[in-house]
Image (cartoon, rainbow, N blue to C red; front, side):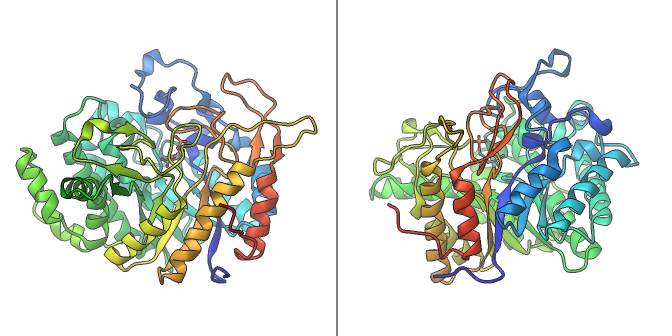
Length: 464
Ligand code: BG6
């Protein structure tokens, strides 16, 4: 089985996890700069800000030519990356953008163009200018919609020739679990406040979908969901209903961004939990008129749901009941390749729009052996088995645009802010304490992925 000829192959990175250079080019403080222990821990106040591994990250800001050359060496046709909003609008509410920030991404896109790698850009990947939190209270304030639109307009206009593929908010459903990162609210924010902020973010997303279509000829813009697919822990009807409700929590975002309206199950949830969203006349019409062109998602693990919610444990940001049939990664995330086929089918059945797998991968610690090599067979097995299931979904008739594995070059982990949780085909010699030479080393998986891309999936093998 070969993947389609126009299938996009590559990897995904995020500005705050790779760039470093936190103060370069006039960049403002971002919410991510205040999370030295990862997004599930409380954030620092700016005046208490201590050292943060992301201040330097893997120094992509200065080393991107070398890094892009390495990615090109694997035959990438696509690189998913994000723009740091705070490089373009350092405080978030300026009337003019920061030219140095724009010029940095000009250079990155020019480098990608040299190798024929298509940039695929997320407008907001787990960061926003902290000024918008301090001065306006984050997305709870409706004015954020306008600031985000202005930012999107500037980057759409500037990069209209180079960037034809866009995403609005990374893992937009994650605000329910990490509100500071998602919508700039305090960790103890109430559900009422979080859903109000989410309403504003969904409106902002709808507006920039229309703006993108109006500004860039031939552009496609999608949404991005954390694909937290839940299975019933048992066939007990109560577990089945618990699973339906669990899945509704994240499918709600897709339902608004694709179908253009608040689903009945969500209106019921709001009613029963005394959540009363403030809306303006025209909000619902705006949501109805801005369906995304495609749906993208991250997938690392599936989870189970049970009527007994006390059995939940936290995996990738979302908590779920462990599945007794699955093994766990070193970081406790359950490994379930078949889950990606299931998820692709669920999303395609529901939305009937093309899908894009924009994150998938194994966070693991790597060891450099005496010969200076990194034999990451565990990573190869994980990716191989997931890609085989993507091929199964293609055979099921699901339309899939491409696959970008998470962290093709080692980067700082989002949930724990560690370097030692590595996803890359390329090793970066940097440790959790900030020591290391920053040298880049190709792992065994580098050569494997190159072969997979070169053979359009023909090199995938049944390993499990
Ligand atoms: C996704 C995020 O949740 O998972 C990425 O979009 C993140 O930013 C990735 O890095 C893997 O999670 P972690 O915590 O292992 O970095």
